[in-house]
Length: 397
Image (tube, rainbow, N blue to C red; front, side, top):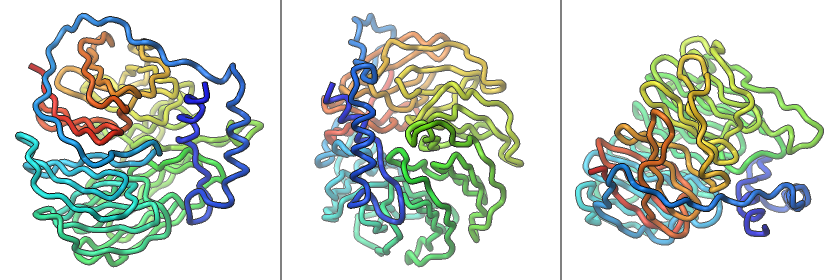
């Protein structure tokens, strides 16, 4: 029980002011501990059932990236860049590997506490740190191009578009930096609640618009070139007797399919909105999620707060099926892989499921310390990054 409480507490963060948890956070964390201490609040992970694989999955290569992301919730997600994949560990290592065979192309030891990234741009690799630094490395050889200070910890993957680097920090600021030298072009500020989940959603850049969600339940669309607000909507209004009940974080990365954006929120459900106008199309408030989702060609696949997986109709949000065989196994967001989707779990297994009916069709262990971040897919190859630093390329035969 203590281990599960500790795992959940690692997700929670007092996100106030412009710093991460420090002196002011102690009382809030103690309160959360008290709330979770009862037996009724602890659900054991389901044991894995024997599986008769329906498809064959093969590990193409496997490499180690330092010590991985560690136990704390950070946004260290591998990034694909033409013929290479770049990954970073919590203690400051950034490595680039050939996609084809995993050959190490370059390695950099930044000696920084990395927390967000890498993001990739036009020849640049962008990483954020827990003390609010943003560094740009050369995609070619890893040499440092520039380094700037932002206002607080970077817990989202930096995005780069049209020469502008988008940085989201835990204090509610979104900054637009010049990709060439890191100079600030614009910024957007929004206050964040006193108590929220540890993490921030990664901004989505679509053409000339930057879209991001907040712990207050707000979704905002900004103009890429100057940061001015295009539209802003409330996905949810905080309610409840306690601060925990009032958490409505939008921590999961938004998903765009066609002209619709899908948003997952903790305590505020899954919402579909028009990209052009911000008009609400549908909402499933009873499905709470901070892990995230992905969209196939017919269905939206969502990992909820208890690690149930839902398939929702993209057009109206109706439930197609629900998969609960991996309940409480701290699943990642689903990732579409060919005709299937894949999630990782706290024991380091990848699980492949049929998109049609939610049947598990394959399973593979990657990193026995667990998988926290959503796998990434390029062509027919899936790349998974474990908490212990294992980076693996996997294909379906």
